[in-house]
Image (tube, rainbow, N blue to C red; front, side, top):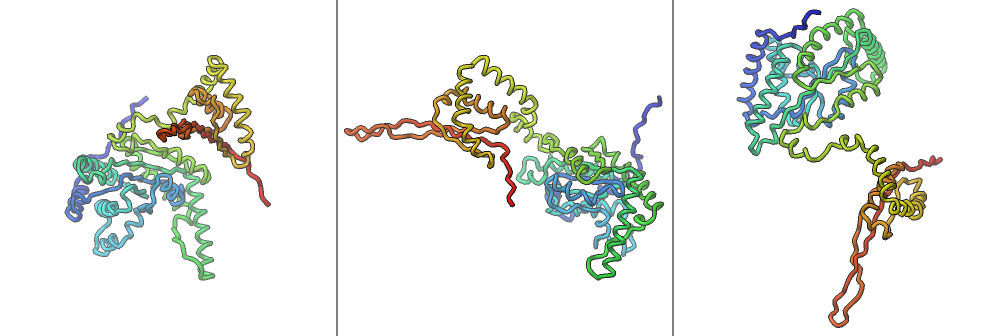
Length: 396
């Protein structure tokens, strides 16, 4: 079996990227100042085959990551006033111009927490420039680490998300979109109501749709794949329906704090276990505790069960519709801390969510008539809350 040889970016392309990036960076720093080179905390690169649903899913992806800003669509950026001025001046919008326009765009305040880049990178030079940008962001973070500006230079996080469909599905969706757009535009022209949508030649010609898909595979796909070992990579199967694709996205973008937080913050939080860690064996531990109550503390366990059956359950049953019952009690059985644990575990085993709080009240007990001193006793009131799925009553 032949050995697998890793594909490397040619030295010339790396050198071109370094020259391009350095020129853009120096211009940017001269214009805004080094302390204002504040790029997004999170950069999510969204790539996808034609018809994979990038436009459809970009809003959902932004919501999943808590982003409120609009995605930066590179094709739209290249049609911006700045790009048009370059074209009108006889200049070609190549990698240098793309990088320059993009970096200036990323400095806008609305992108500070994060941004989705739709259609970047598309070339190997752009791939290398992205790596250089992240390295420069990390250098700025180190430079301002112990300053008042440190919050503006946080640990950068880069995600690559590729929505993938096969060639047959891509072509079918492109042509289907073309038919829908054509019908929509014919209706707009007939009635004068609504807005005309862009009609792409690739959405009407099967051979052009096929060529567009293959260009994606040969250029954008390779560019994104080359970053797979460098940044967080998410491959999303976009063949299914919208709901299925959304679930695939949610699973892929599951929050991982150790990858996103500053290392100092991670160290500070290390002593607090992640929720999913403590629930892995929660059921087994619950069973073990309940059996130990019966075997080692049978008498007390019987008292707690009797208290639940006679004092609490009648109230819970009366709240079967709302699914929430609040009980205040001074029953002495609960004075034993182990009894409190038993009560919570019993309700957990039965499918309820129980919470218990001890409220102490100082109640006047007697008065010394000669001195006027009042002696109080401590009244212990146990506040128990039981929650469960209530009953839904259909109302006509």
